[in-house]
Length: 283
Image: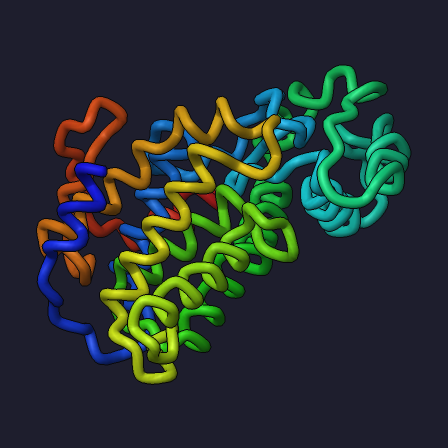
């Protein structure tokens, strides 16, 4: 309630005017999400673990999971790029495909995937696998989140970053805990409170819409529809507090640097580094 009280009292801040995200803004947005995902600013290509959140193994730069099948798409792209050369996943590709067909939505089944994380970590030394991950990151998270921002008429870098962060952690689609579902509920809440269209592209103030998204996402983190994610998401609520802090301190454009909050709610300085993607992808 403390943070919501601050939000309610916050005044409007200046809009950036252009919908395109500048390289420095993208760098800071992605570094923030990288930090809250894996405690480091750089992309964690070799990260892999079973979080016990109903999604099987979570791995790579965007938390690709075996239980939502996006990990399979990355691996298939990698195998195709290797053009017949052996890969680390050759012995488990058929099992991954089976898991993808077992059920719709989330699947926690990891039976038959012994050595999966070791294979992912080893493959991450290969620039080809890193490229497959970055292409999937853009296709599944960055591009759709920014396309949605355009559709909604969002101009503030902080709002665009908030959407990207949600796409990475919660995904999109019909899942009631997804970022798209949060956007819909946020717009309805604004419309109900003001009797005006709920999204900025229809004339509503972006600040009001952003505050509504904060509230809706906080509720999902603390009381998700999928109970298997509750412990993991409740522990990650600090990333929301960090975005609240950025908003309440007027840091909404991400031009050269921002002071966010770390896991202990201490200041976390994030500076522009436009080489982050290239250096991590091809080094």
